[in-house]
Amino acid sequence: MSKTINLGIQIVPKSKTLDSYALVDKAIEVIQKSGVKYEVTPFETVMEGPQDKLMAIALLAQEAVLAAGADEVLVYYRMQIRNNSNVTMEEKTAKFK
Image (cartoon, rainbow, N blue to C red; front, side, top):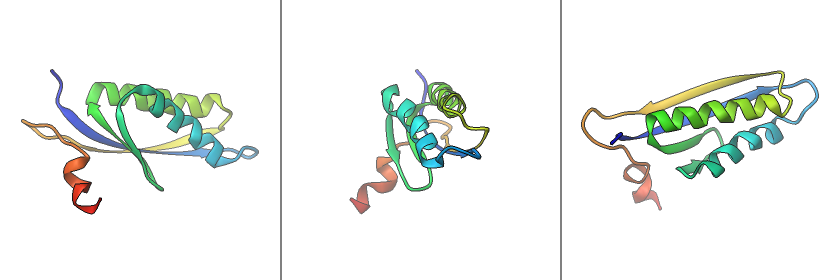
C-alpha cells in the first residue's frame, strides 16, 4: 500500500484572451472529480493521497487548462513525503479550525 503524502499544486495559466481564474477553475474541477481529499487555498490546491495518484491528477489538471485554451501553463509543485509514515493535511491545520 502506498503512503499518503501531501501535494500542493499551483497552476498559473498564460493566455492573451482568456480569464486566468476561469482557466484555473478547470484544473480545480479535475481535482474535485478525482475523489482525493483536497483543499483549495488562494495560492494553491493541496491534495492528500498516494504520490502516484496525485501526480496523475496533477497532470490531468494541467492538461485540462491547456485544453481549455491556455497558451501555456506554469506549474509549481510542493510535496511532503515521509519515509515510514503518512502525511495528512489535518495534522498541520486541525489546531487552527
